[in-house]
Amino acid sequence: MTLRHTDTLATKQTAPVDQRDRAWWLDFTAKTVVFFGGISAIIFIVSIFLFIATQGLDFAVHRLNWADFFTSPIWRPTSSPPQYGALALICGTASISLLAMLIAVPFSLGAAIYIGEFASGKKREWLKILIELLAAIPSVVWGVIGLHVIGPALVNIFHIDIGLCLLNAGIILGLMAAPIMTTIAEDALRAVPDTYREAAEALGATRWQVVWRVVLPHARPGLSAAVLLGIGRAFGETIAVLMASGHAIVMPTSVFDSVRALTATVAAELGETAQGDDHYQALFVLGVLLFGITFVINLTADRIIRGSRRQAT
Amino acid sequence: MKTIPIAVLTSALAFVACTKSNRTLIQNAGSDTMLEVAQALAETYGKEVSGVSIAVKGGGSQVGISGIIDGTIDLANSSRKLKPEEVEAARKKNHEPVEHHVGYDGIAIYVHKENPITSLTIEQLKQIYMDNGKLTKWSQLGVTVTAGMSDEIILISRQSNSGTYEYFRESVLGDKKTNFRLGTRDMNGSKDVVDLVTKTRSAIGYSGLAYANAEVKLIPVAKKDGEKAILPTIDSVLDKSYPIARPLFMYTVGQPKPAVQQYLDWIKSDAGQRVLVANHYPPLRKL
Image 1 (cartoon, one colour):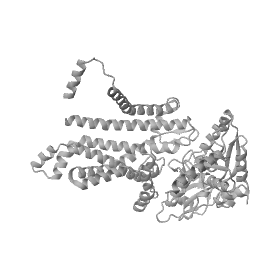
Image 2 (cartoon, each protein chain N blue to C red; image 1 turned 60 degrees about the vertical axis):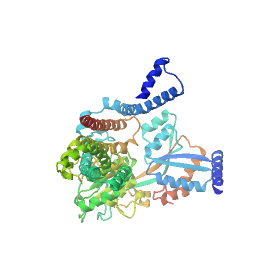
Image 3 (cartoon, chains in turn brown, blue; image 1 turned 135 degrees about the vertical axis):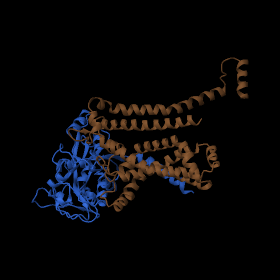
Image 4 (cartoon, rainbow over the protein chains, first blue to last red; image 1 turned 45 degrees about the vertical axis):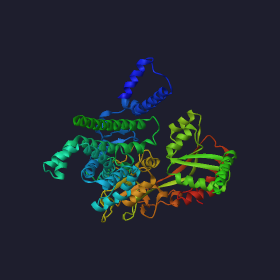
């Protein structure tokens, strides 16, 4: 406060323009560098979107049958004539993500509640470190686990033919998404003011009653955001899904069906298409679709978090 | 401690010597099917002939072919012939592709080692893999389903732009217009197909003969019903009795430069062909 006061005094006494000394230049440079750092995210996201969209634009506008694209499960890009039906791929991605959430939500909510409300001291610190480590495991490692551990295990437990299926991919993605969801959910729980807990305890509530009746309802927007970001993570995951899902174009009717995800399709097919041909462009249309879905999910999560902050203040 | 600067110095010297000497570098890229054998060839050749080093890269036949069209590599590996439009594209850039036939690849039919099936015909394979084909159950093939195996045939295939996928479609399903059945598990590599069959009791898959191992069973294939079913081996591919085999090619831009020509001559010689056999690829002729 005092600093600003002397500042205004100084400007009044000397010339109204800035003094372009060393400090001014340093300030100017730092401001410019930070500005470009700040808007780089916007530049990147806009240029990536434009790149993906323009790569597939010609095909999407002139030759793609959009009705087939959304309603036909037949994806045969190298047949003659080629067929570009993405329904089975969309259902594949959606069903894997849904199953992943069914597995991840109880795990991550439980972990967040334990860490945030029950654990204390060293135990709590260790758990947080371990969960962050879990989030850092590369997805190809998860893929190998799906291929060589969970796959054979599912065959043995359920006596099914093939272990690379919707359930396998769902388990893998659930485990992958859980750490991020735990971290965000725990932040949401921690944002609940302690006075609320103290008030409830003063009324004679048990620890669990405090969590169930007071903390969870209050943290709900943050918790929903955690789930949404987890879904976003599941939608975008590629290599682990490619390895664990079985990669088969099937409209899933049971958790033991092999399925194919949008991301896995792009990853498997893009490498060997000739640049610019219809198949190449069709894969970019899938890319735009994925981009759109994750964008909407993240935006919704962001709005929910913002909404909850406004409510809190 | 003294050895470290010396090591650095000598390696730096060696590096300078390498770049300054007349050592020729041959850029070789393309087919994943041929990657292992291409590496083995390059290694053996490097030991026999000094002054030439060969850099081998995979990436798929398409990668090698694009390299020939753009004239960026010396030697492209391809498990399929160039398409007319690709030859046209290369000529437009004044790069005349020249084909060199270097060996063969047998496409073997793999099943789980406990599967009792003894033979299949091309027509049966077609009905198994074709869209709306009649065969979907092992019992339809006369196989008694054993414990842990379901009656449904689990189809394992390749991603739709693999050379092996295209070749299988043309030689087994009949032509380019026939579609594969929807719902096949599409693997991204020759080895992945064999790995998945090893673990799946009711599965069937197709992949290069070179990827066979003791954990899977190879099925003899007959051209027609009533004809003798032939097990894929180097010999049966060589005498053309095994029906699903394809030639392997290397492509150059125009007539190759002397170093590349010498390498190609060596690959086609008995010494080079023995490397193919050692890697389970059928050679050009009986050795």
